[in-house]
Image (cartoon, rainbow, N blue to C red):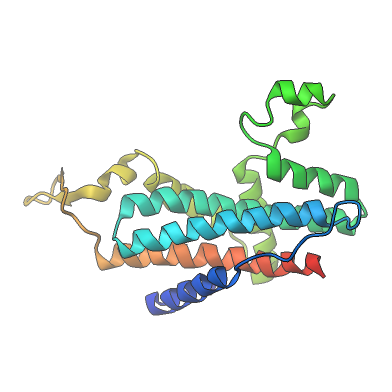
Length: 232
């Protein structure tokens, strides 16, 4: 998280996180909901860990294959997922500390079930509930929560997750100018760019991508270590 981290240090972090994901072969059996109030909360957290693990593996594969298009598509999902997990931990922790267990359970259900198209409106109505009960905050709200939390830890102002997402990740992951120029090269006159199917990234491009992979994984495991305390 500190400034001027070298490419070698970032790769070292990535290798460490790769081992940590692999080391988690399984989760211990969870108690039944009526035996332990944390069961629904842990269940959603475990599902988020699994999704994070496979997105991370996709990131590593794209780096090894020097596939910048694939990297940006995956880092966009991974970055959003890391923000969602950080938000989930922060909100669950705050609700439990305030004694609002019912609200914490509802949030666990939202994160585990809520989404576009599922549960369907008909399924929700049949349960006598409202679609608002399953609506999640947008991803910017989640990123802002994580950025605000890191401001306290780093003791400095900044919107690390949101700024990098807006300025680099979302642009590279979409069919914008930035996203499309990944596979271009400069014309001999250096005034225009041409499509190039054989173009491979330059070392400076790779260093930037490695930094994004390491930074997002650092944030994920920062909150994962805190989330694991719920199991005790």
